[in-house]
Length: 272
Image (cartoon, rainbow, N blue to C red; front, side, top):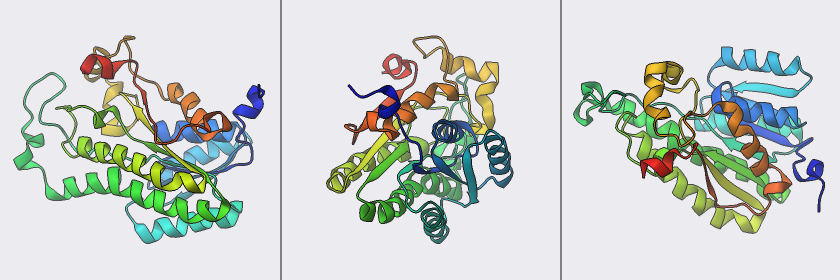
C-alpha cells in the first residue's frame, strides 16, 4: 500500500483556480499551495487576490495571481498560456468561479420576493448568471485541455452545487439550470477526455459560508433556513472542502472521473 505522503502528493504540480480570491476557491488554493503545488489564482477581484497572494506567499507558498474575467474568452486563453509559460505545464485546474445571479422568488423566511419573479428578472442578469456559472466552465475546460492533451493528462475539478439536483426558491432562477448543465458537461467531458489521461470531476457543495450572495449566510437569520436542512445541524465552512479537493487532485483520486461528489452535511438527503 502506498504511503499517505505519496497518495496525496501534489508537490510541484502546476495548478489554476478560477474564482480563487475568496470562499471555496481560496480554500482550494490554500490546500494545494500548502501541499507544495504552484498555484495561480484567476479572479476579477484584484484587491482580494492581492490579499490572498500576500497572505500565502508570507507562508512560503508558491502562489501568484492574474486578474481575469472568466467570461472574457481571449483573456482566459492568454491567462492559461501565461501559466503554462511560467510553470512549464498545467496539471490541475479548478473551474470554480461562480456568482449569485440575483434573488429567488421567495425570501429565506418564505415570503414572495417580487424582485426574483420571472417576469421581473433583467435579461442581463440571466445572461451573466449563465455566462459565469456555465459558459465559463466550458471556456476553462477548453483552455485546460489545450495544454493537458500534449502533456499526456491532467485533472479538472469543477465546482457545481447540490442546486443542480433540486429546485430552490430562494436562489436566483438561472443558478439551478446552470449547475444542472455543468453536471452533464462534466460527465460528457469525462467520456471524451479519459482516453487522453484527463480526469474530470465535479464537487457539489451544499450551503457554505462564503462571500456569494453578499455573504448572507454569515447572518444568523439567513443561515437558519439552511442549517435546518443539514443532517448534522450546521452549514459548511470552507475548511470542510479542502480534503475532498486534495483527494480529487492527487494520485489518491486516480480512479475518479465523471464523478459528481456531494459535500453538504446531508442536506440533499433531507431536501429530497
